[in-house]
Length: 338
Image (cartoon, one colour):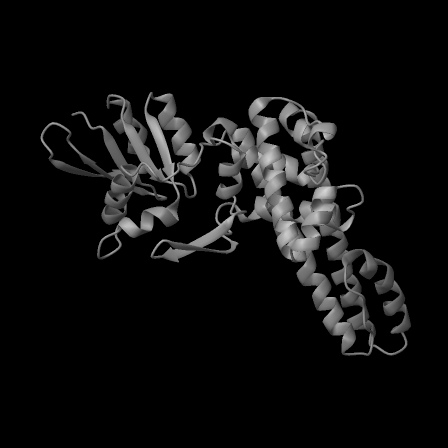
């Protein structure tokens, strides 16, 4: 049995496959248990396997590529319009098969285990930061009930909180003070965990020539460099820096009819985490702008937020150029841009 394209809907236990025999046009559907998937594809001649780029897709992409198959990961949002009527596993597999035939849907690059490991560190760090924010905000709210207002920002809070707790020692019951101190200890423990993850990312950056190369670009630091290399995968999967910036959602949305096109705000498509990091880096460049004529002129004719988005777009394109060409960042050549 030979099939050109197989659409596969992956899950925890049961996988649904959809394919069409290219010689007879017969539709074939298969329902496989997780442990049967690799055996099934090992018996197939090389085919194109299409999947949604969801949890576990990169693992299956690597495993099926080892068996000689071509794997195409598709964005889940772009597969959804091809689901007809009721949403079922078989319907999803058929929608993936149909979407795989569309040449204008850009595939997701299959990530290596190392790239996924770097992104996992970033996700855990983000989660820890959210937990720390929740705990410190709870402390602010509780102490405000007793007349103590604490400043915004973790560094300012770290200086002010011990003073506030000392001032309330004579007013509050000991059981509450002890609980508040325990809450603060938990927050500081999260701070140490975050620092440990950042240290591991520093080691990863030091061992990666690609990360070190883009870390030389102004506005790109440890987090952006490691996340960008891991998220992008193979730079050759993008035609140019403009396509990479569009993939990150750093270009205007468009709407139009009757031949008239109107540009709106940035599309915010693609990876939100990397886009956020680039926006932070761009904001830093705009705020400490001293020598860039381009940024000065941009701020003179555009609002601040638009200027930040434009600088972030430029950073993404420069980042792609450094990774794709292998040439180091040259401040003299690009100083007019950044």
